[in-house]
Image 1 (cartoon, helix red, strand yellow):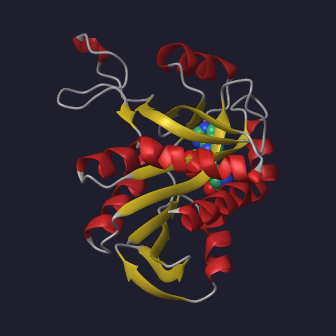
Image 2 (cartoon, rainbow, N blue to C red):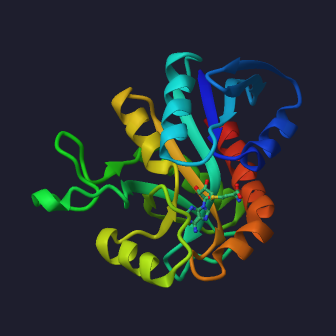
Image 3 (spheres, rainbow, N blue to C red):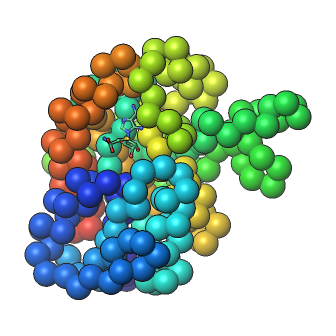
Length: 228
Ligand code: SAH
């Protein structure tokens, strides 16, 4: 099976590329796509650049152009749930867009007609992730991830996202990737390691912990590949 591994930033896919060692590169639509092998799987790997638009383009390209039959996202996120500390892992059970707003027409936040407020994640892959966490003896949180085209660094915005969507973590790509995968019927997993807690200090924490948290997430994704 051909599996896509996707991140938003170079730091998020670097540990995966390092681990697989040998790969070919293809330039397509202003991105680089890396193809190699790991644990008996053909892989196509890319980082999209930050945000919902770029991640939509990359997820669709990974599937439609490079033939990925499954997509695993590895990256970092801001924590909302106080149980999540920097470096902890969360896998999305459902995802939503916190900045999608046509509430003026009476719709709930995150909803547009013919869409849905939440995208449900793939239970089978979450079960695999839980098995991996058990084997590695680490805590993996399951929860709702909220996505938006904003780096959240305010307690007020964070509280609003928590109250509105019951979200446990937030980031800038997960839901757009999930929308693409669900529409194209490709199983997906969105995994994130916490880099900051989306408060006043978020940008400083992010800069300090991006690399180590991206590494945590990537190591976990590699273990998942060994189990699929
Ligand atoms: N340091 C970058 C900007 C990072 S934007 C630069 O200067 O170019 C934050 C990235 O990490 C996004 O890809 C997003 O998915 C994730 N992320 C981590 N913490 C976040 C937060 N508090 N709010 C939104 N996204 C966050």
